[in-house]
Image (tube, rainbow, N blue to C red; front, side, top):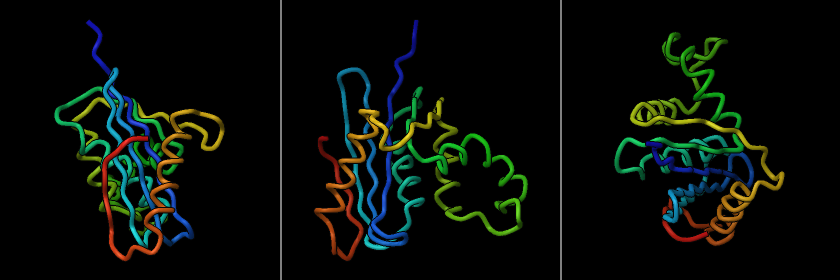
Length: 158
Protein backbone atom coordinates (compact mmCIF):
# COMPACT_ATOMS: atom_id res chain seq x y z
CA UNK A 1 0.00 0.00 0.00
CA UNK A 2 1.40 3.41 -0.96
CA UNK A 3 1.66 6.02 1.76
CA UNK A 4 -0.01 9.38 1.12
CA UNK A 5 2.53 12.18 0.75
CA UNK A 6 1.92 15.67 2.11
CA UNK A 7 3.07 18.32 -0.38
CA UNK A 8 4.51 21.26 1.53
CA UNK A 9 5.32 24.25 -0.66
CA UNK A 10 7.21 27.03 1.16
CA UNK A 11 8.56 30.47 0.41
CA UNK A 12 9.91 33.46 2.26
CA UNK A 13 10.81 37.00 1.27
CA UNK A 14 11.98 40.35 2.59
CA UNK A 15 11.65 43.86 1.29
CA UNK A 16 15.15 44.96 2.06
CA UNK A 17 17.46 42.45 3.69
CA UNK A 18 17.07 42.95 6.57
CA UNK A 19 13.65 44.50 6.41
CA UNK A 20 9.97 43.59 6.64
CA UNK A 21 9.48 39.94 5.73
CA UNK A 22 6.86 37.28 5.19
CA UNK A 23 6.72 33.51 4.89
CA UNK A 24 4.10 31.19 3.45
CA UNK A 25 3.47 27.44 3.67
CA UNK A 26 0.93 25.55 1.55
CA UNK A 27 0.14 22.02 2.71
CA UNK A 28 -1.68 19.70 0.31
CA UNK A 29 -2.87 16.15 0.89
CA UNK A 30 -5.28 14.94 -1.76
CA UNK A 31 -8.18 17.38 -1.83
CA UNK A 32 -7.29 18.82 1.59
CA UNK A 33 -5.30 22.05 1.71
CA UNK A 34 -4.09 24.40 4.40
CA UNK A 35 -2.30 27.71 3.90
CA UNK A 36 -0.27 29.37 6.65
CA UNK A 37 1.54 32.70 6.60
CA UNK A 38 3.49 35.03 8.83
CA UNK A 39 4.90 38.54 8.85
CA UNK A 40 7.85 40.08 10.72
CA UNK A 41 8.60 43.82 10.70
CA UNK A 42 12.40 43.37 10.80
CA UNK A 43 14.00 40.12 9.68
CA UNK A 44 16.06 38.52 6.92
CA UNK A 45 15.12 36.61 3.80
CA UNK A 46 16.85 33.48 5.10
CA UNK A 47 14.92 33.55 8.38
CA UNK A 48 11.67 33.80 6.41
CA UNK A 49 12.64 30.84 4.18
CA UNK A 50 13.45 28.72 7.23
CA UNK A 51 10.35 29.95 9.04
CA UNK A 52 8.11 28.83 6.19
CA UNK A 53 9.43 25.28 6.40
CA UNK A 54 9.35 25.29 10.18
CA UNK A 55 5.73 26.42 10.42
CA UNK A 56 4.65 24.04 7.68
CA UNK A 57 6.18 21.09 9.53
CA UNK A 58 4.74 22.28 12.85
CA UNK A 59 1.26 22.08 11.28
CA UNK A 60 1.56 18.32 10.78
CA UNK A 61 -0.25 16.46 13.55
CA UNK A 62 1.56 13.12 13.17
CA UNK A 63 4.68 11.69 11.52
CA UNK A 64 4.20 11.96 7.77
CA UNK A 65 5.79 11.41 4.41
CA UNK A 66 6.46 14.93 3.09
CA UNK A 67 7.59 16.39 -0.19
CA UNK A 68 8.89 19.81 0.81
CA UNK A 69 9.36 22.12 -2.19
CA UNK A 70 11.23 25.42 -1.87
CA UNK A 71 13.07 27.89 -4.08
CA UNK A 72 15.60 28.43 -1.27
CA UNK A 73 18.92 26.68 -1.85
CA UNK A 74 19.86 27.89 1.64
CA UNK A 75 17.05 25.78 3.13
CA UNK A 76 17.43 22.74 0.86
CA UNK A 77 21.25 22.54 0.97
CA UNK A 78 21.25 23.32 4.67
CA UNK A 79 18.99 20.38 5.44
CA UNK A 80 20.46 17.92 2.92
CA UNK A 81 24.18 18.79 2.79
CA UNK A 82 25.43 21.22 5.45
CA UNK A 83 23.65 20.07 8.62
CA UNK A 84 25.90 17.08 9.44
CA UNK A 85 29.05 19.22 9.23
CA UNK A 86 27.54 21.95 11.38
CA UNK A 87 26.64 19.40 14.02
CA UNK A 88 30.09 17.78 13.96
CA UNK A 89 31.68 21.20 14.45
CA UNK A 90 29.34 22.20 17.30
CA UNK A 91 27.14 24.41 15.11
CA UNK A 92 30.12 26.17 13.56
CA UNK A 93 30.40 26.92 9.86
CA UNK A 94 33.39 25.62 7.89
CA UNK A 95 35.23 28.91 8.56
CA UNK A 96 34.73 28.62 12.32
CA UNK A 97 31.99 31.22 12.82
CA UNK A 98 28.72 30.33 14.51
CA UNK A 99 26.09 29.10 12.03
CA UNK A 100 23.62 31.89 11.29
CA UNK A 101 20.01 31.21 12.29
CA UNK A 102 21.12 28.30 14.47
CA UNK A 103 17.91 28.56 16.51
CA UNK A 104 15.80 27.86 13.42
CA UNK A 105 18.14 25.17 12.04
CA UNK A 106 17.99 23.27 15.34
CA UNK A 107 14.19 23.42 15.43
CA UNK A 108 14.00 22.31 11.80
CA UNK A 109 16.38 19.44 12.48
CA UNK A 110 14.20 18.27 15.37
CA UNK A 111 10.99 18.49 13.32
CA UNK A 112 12.53 16.87 10.26
CA UNK A 113 13.52 13.85 12.37
CA UNK A 114 9.81 13.24 13.07
CA UNK A 115 8.93 12.88 9.38
CA UNK A 116 10.16 11.26 6.16
CA UNK A 117 11.01 14.31 4.06
CA UNK A 118 12.09 14.62 0.48
CA UNK A 119 13.63 18.10 0.05
CA UNK A 120 13.10 19.47 -3.46
CA UNK A 121 14.55 22.70 -4.79
CA UNK A 122 12.56 24.52 -7.49
CA UNK A 123 13.75 27.52 -9.44
CA UNK A 124 11.92 30.61 -8.17
CA UNK A 125 10.02 32.88 -10.55
CA UNK A 126 10.32 30.30 -13.32
CA UNK A 127 6.70 29.33 -13.85
CA UNK A 128 6.30 26.57 -11.24
CA UNK A 129 2.60 26.99 -10.37
CA UNK A 130 2.92 25.97 -6.71
CA UNK A 131 5.96 28.15 -6.09
CA UNK A 132 4.34 31.12 -7.86
CA UNK A 133 1.17 30.72 -5.75
CA UNK A 134 3.07 30.83 -2.44
CA UNK A 135 5.21 33.71 -3.71
CA UNK A 136 2.02 35.65 -4.54
CA UNK A 137 0.68 34.87 -1.05
CA UNK A 138 3.71 36.27 0.75
CA UNK A 139 3.68 39.38 -1.41
CA UNK A 140 0.03 39.95 -0.43
CA UNK A 141 1.01 39.48 3.23
CA UNK A 142 3.83 42.01 2.83
CA UNK A 143 1.52 44.49 1.08
CA UNK A 144 -1.19 44.11 3.73
CA UNK A 145 1.06 44.28 6.80
CA UNK A 146 3.52 46.93 5.62
CA UNK A 147 4.40 49.07 8.62
CA UNK A 148 2.86 46.74 11.22
CA UNK A 149 5.30 46.91 14.18
CA UNK A 150 4.85 43.36 15.50
CA UNK A 151 4.97 39.81 14.15
CA UNK A 152 1.70 38.45 12.78
CA UNK A 153 0.69 34.91 11.76
CA UNK A 154 -2.41 33.62 10.06
CA UNK A 155 -4.14 30.95 8.09
CA UNK A 156 -6.28 31.25 4.99
CA UNK A 157 -6.57 30.47 1.31
CA UNK A 158 -4.38 31.09 -1.69
